[in-house]
Every structure is written in C-alpha cells, then in structure tokens.
Length: 380
Image 1: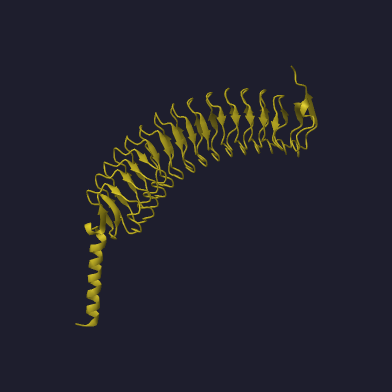
Image 2: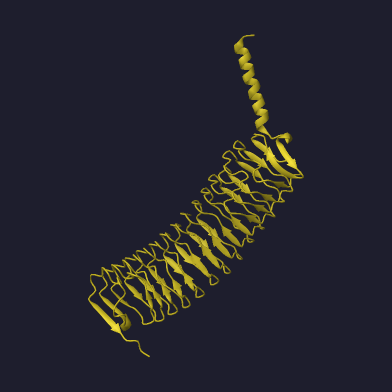
C-alpha cells in the first residue's frame, strides 16, 4: 500500500471520529454531582443535558462555540446567567416545563430564530436574549410576570404580551416592531428605545410608569391613561404630533427633539414640567396654574406664545426661542436660571416684578429686539 493511500485512510478515520464527537453529546462529557451540572467537556453540535440534572452552574458551558442545539431536561427551574452567551452557532433550544426563570445574558448574541417559553416561566431577566438579531418568532406563556431581555432583536415584528405581565423592560433596538398592545394589569413599561418603526402603542388603565421610548421616530401619538404617575424618555420621537396628558400627572419630562409637536396643553395638577428642548415646530404652550417648576424649552424656534402661570416659583430654559415676542414673569418667581431667555432674538416686550429691577445676570443676553421692560409691583 502506498503512502498516499495510508494518508487518505487516516483522513477518513479522523473525519468519522469528528462526526461521532461533534454530532451529539455523550454522557461522559458531563460532570454531574448531586443533580448539579458542574461542567460540560465535550464539543458536540447537539447537547442533550441528561435527565436528573436539576441545576446548572453558570460557567458549565464556557467556550461551547460550536453548539447548534441544546435540549434541557425536566427538573431545571433556572437558566443561569451567561450560560450560552456568545455561542454564535446556537440556533435551537428546547426548554423544560419546569422552568421558572431565565437569567441575564443566558442566550445573548446567539443565532436563535424561534423561541418558545414554556408555561410556568415567571421571569425573563434583562439581556437574556439580547443581540439575537435573527430571532423572528417569540411565544410567551400566560405565567410571565417580568418580561425583559430582548434588546437588539431587530427581526422581531410581532410581540404578543401575556396578560400576566406586570413589568416589561428590554426591547431596545427592536427595529421590526410596528405596534404593541400592552395588556390590562401591566404596571411598568420601559426599554423600547430605538424602536424606529414603532407607530402605535396602546396603554391600559392601571399603568403607573412609562419611560424608555427615546428614538422611536415613527411614534405619532401618545395617550397616557389617568393612572400614570411617572413619564419620561420620549426624546427624538420625531413624528410625535399629539400628546395627551392626564390630570393625574404632577411631573412630566423627556420629550426633547420631538420636532412634530405643534401645541402643548396641560391639565391642572401638573407641578413640574421640563424636557421639551428643540421641539422646533412647537408654536404654543399652555401651562396650567398649578405649575411651580418650569424649564427645558430651549431652542423651540417656532414658539411664539408662552403664558407663565401665577404661582410659578422656578423658571429656566427658553434660550434660543427666536420666535418668542413677549413674556411676563409672574411675581411668584423666586429663582430664574442664568441666561433663561438668552438669544430670544424676536423678544421685544418683557414684564418682570419690580423686585427684579436689577435683572438676573445674562437673563436677556442676545435679545437684540428688546425695546420695553415693564416693572410690576406686587399687590397685597
């Protein structure tokens, strides 16, 4: 037999051995102690974790970069953090009915395309499936209470949130989402920043916190239910034209760069208002009499009318409002930010309390059209 034939036969033998080693995991590949999987030492493409394992240590599958499929046994209640994070060949997982929690980064940056979460699962924690950019199908059970962990799943278009969910946080950069309906009973919504195609969100009564929609450039309308107490994080929602604020709100902020907002009207009860910088088409803002703190309307270049309410205490942030022609500062104001009306180049008439005759330094710097300043006396 020639050396060439011998060499060829050895290659074939090695390929056959590789197929045996890499196709399916063997029991000898697992180190298991008292039902705890300590470490997996194989390199199979399909890993079937043996029955009887009830807990997995978080580093058990380090560097299993070639794995394509994982089957978990019945009895597992938690998938530990970073268990298969960065396994860029992983395409399929089979989760057990006993599962209750998937911890952070458990399957992040993998090639999963479909995920079915079994009934009984209660928590999917932050970044659990983050960066799974091929994930397009997600099935969730009616047992989930906390739903997070899908940031960067850009192919996910249909998100059906179970009625059991109370808190949701973790769909940033899901650029395929176009519409989301949040179920009755949800209390807190966060983490939809950068969902650039999201046009509609339906918010139920009972919701108390909503934030984290920065950069949702397609969102056209925001109607907040009466139950909401805390709102923020809608900066850069370029198509947002209508904002409905309930009477229950006391603090509102986080709408910088919403360049399609033309009119703002707020209900009585609002006390703190900020965060509308660079809303460049905003022409009119109607402030409630209950307002005590107002700031953050800088560079609203189309703003022509802003009547400040009696009772306002702290005032700041109208720098660069180049269309504003007149302003009256009420007697109640005790604190004005440096340069609050700087470069309001169309501002021609100003009324201020007599006690402010020495005007705050820089308050009207750059107001090249300012011709009249009227001082008012505080009446008993």
